[in-house]
Length: 275
Image (cartoon, rainbow, N blue to C red; front, side):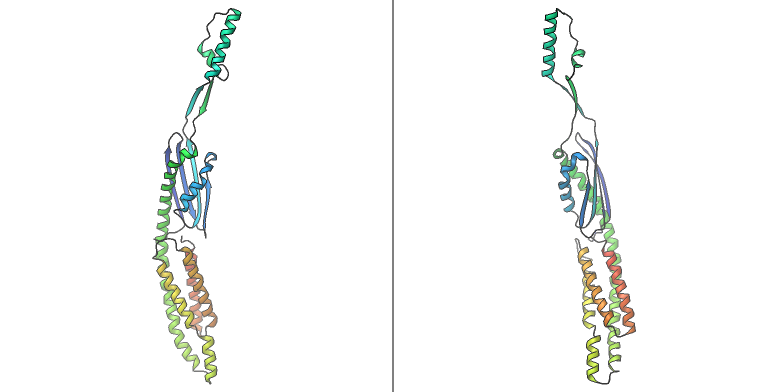
């Protein structure tokens, strides 16, 4: 199924001790696949993994992926037992030396420098990746669904336009037979007539143009990325149309040639939106 290149996908997920993660993926038109990522500083190591996930699903477009992390408060209280033991040893020694019998309270001990510390529990990128991969995948699902919807609309438009182009090509084919016969009859000698026919003959160009138009129409029904191929076909059709216009020996053919070039340009403009 044909896909466009404009889309948006957004999903959230809960990842263990980290909390909530959010992924937004946007895509716009681009000749090739270009991926731009915005990740929290601690997740930069996952850039390559996310890029590979996107590359496995998309072939063209400028992709912007934004990952956010809303960390859940997760702290751990640590006791430096070795340091506390040294403090207690010193307290006992001081008590013996100076004959102090007062007991040391626990709140005094835990408030001594370095005895208690609070550390934040963090999830490493490697621990985070399995869950984040799923969120990236579902965000890509949403984006691709939008691109398919755009692709369906583009396919309908392109089919109508290429059908109109084929009608114009058919008109030129018919008119060329009449025009060439009328003009050839005006020459006095066979030599002049032969030279004119050689110079004004556009039958090969018309055949190639008709072939390219048919190829374009058939490509619209092909599954997978076809945007680059359609753009190439449009370039070839425009080249044939330019030659037909340059060799035209008839006013009606010249006018139809201008119309054909305009129709091809419309096709090519829309093809820029096809993956």
